[in-house]
Amino acid sequence: MLAFFRRRTRLWAVAGVWTGSLLTAFNVYAAAVTYVPQFLVRNDFRLVYGAALNAWQHGYGHLYDFAGQKAAVEGLGAYWSPFINPPPLAWLGTLFLPLPFDVAVVLWTALVFAAALLAWYLVAPGAGLTRAAHLALYVGLFPTAFGLMVGQPVALVAAAVAGAWWLAERDRPLAAGIVLSLVAIKPQLALLVPLCLLVAGRRRMFVAWLAATAVMVAVALVLLGGEGLQRYREALSLASQWEPTRRYAIAGPLGLGPQVYAVEAVVVLIAAFAAWRHRHGAVGMPIAVGMVASLLFTPYVGFQDFAMLVVAGWLVLRSGASPVQVGLMVVGYALLELALVVLAVPILVAEAALLVSLLATPVPNQRVPAVAAFARPGNLRAPANAGNPD
Image (cartoon, rainbow, N blue to C red; front, side, top):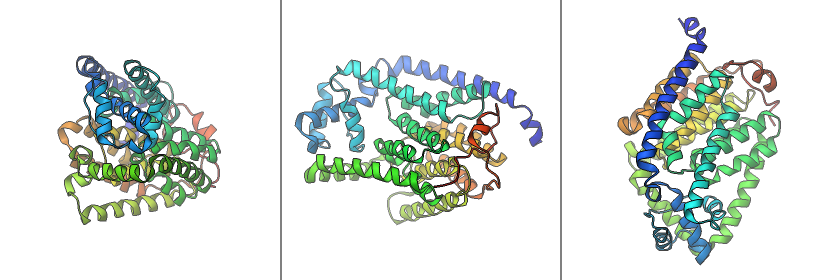
């Protein structure tokens, strides 16, 4: 039976293109009738731009001054809600301040679209029709499309992880670690990736990430100052209590309390052991493990953040996905497309099942050089190699 399905890769690729295209057509319609006409209310870049504007006008110690944020965002004619992302995202938004907001939001949207395409270009496995199917399904998935519609920085994080993997595959661990540090704009989406890389023996990549991240943390602390840091702590405390940030996290169904910490500890242990088992394999598997585990671990998850699981899935396919894992990814894709209907629990169960499956994945005895793996068109099961771990 498995051989029957494997022999029909072109049929599945055509089905993927059609399915993704139909979903994309629906997403374009939704954007045209809802998100484009109401971009001042719907596009989350208004919060980034407003927070950056407030900090530029009153000093970065006021970055998390909600009164200042509110005045800045409403001054744009937009609807305000708290900006609670880390300072690097506001720094990125500062680059757009010389532009009128109407122009800046268009350029920001183009940036996140380009980042999504870059993540696909670097990581999606296969060739030709197979890669087209991955693109159609990626863009067609409603969490991905929603993130693009509202200017969420998820695609930027996906591109950073994809770029880090691409560089590591080419034996450039220091550059890979520096690029990975860019996930600081929304770190909860890849929070456990560095830990998984360290456990997997990718020490130089980890150290480069740590050094670059330490520089950003130091700059942020200097700019925020004591009062600004206290405001940031209060913002994070608000986020942990805010239902929209917990809806798709384990804190949603479990509630706040010791039970959440216990589950988070289990997730970290499973992720670390899974990454350790792949210490002699390709770098893609520890990164995939880290991404899946991060979305289970973090208390702050919006359903648009699940676009990261598509990138993780591509890395699993490249590392040699089992039939069970392929089945889990197909089921997970359907659940994510229906995220607004099925809500958190089925998605969390599917995520946990995928993470456990990564723990049980056999480690290849022989690794295939990256160039050779990429040369096999449509081969989704050949493991890539980044050379010996650091």
